Image (cartoon, rainbow, N blue to C red; front, side, top):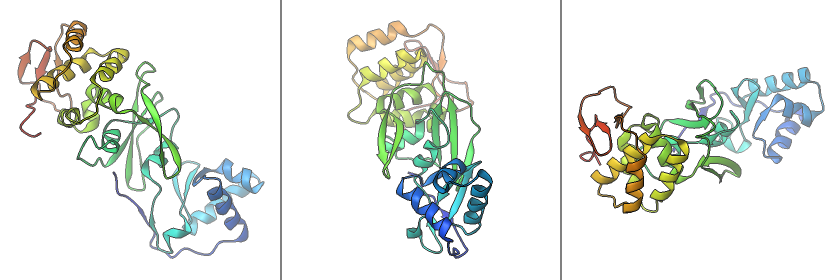
Length: 273
């Protein structure tokens, strides 16, 4: 998981009664990440007045701006020179709707990779520019509505966070290996126990990308993962006749062609696993 924090070098200044009430009320309601509208609702003040109070709190280092109109409360427990941030998934959950935590970030959450991503990958049906907040990069991947499924809700720091399930995480990473490091990270994940390959294939079929099945089939064979023969037969019937690239995360398009799975093997898998 990303280890990050904001470093506040100035000792925080004392709060006014109004400022203290605002932060206490928002924290009490679980709104550690809040908007100007949230502040106006709590304070029963005008938008302009609320903006002024928020500006004062930011100057006193009691809150941190995470994007336009959205702020993060730095709790008292963080100290006078706090090194603190809300969990990056919690911040990510407030940046766009609909969303789910995906790709490399989800692989890491499920302990399907030993690598620690330095970015948070967020799948959404909307378009949004990538953002860097508190030294953490938030990368938004726009999916078609057809591919936006296969997620569930987890609890982190008392907050509900939407994240792809294990099998959808694998399917997504096979769809776009470049968003999980490279194809070797997917290969490592496939060796984990407790995965339902039937569910991965079902997800791939629903996503409508036969390349997912090509990569899954090829990797399962070189990793000596025993797939059900009927499942493998169905996969072979579904894949397209044209060739796809095994690992699109690298520029090289040189390699051998695997006729069975219709893949250009532009990366050797096995030696580094």
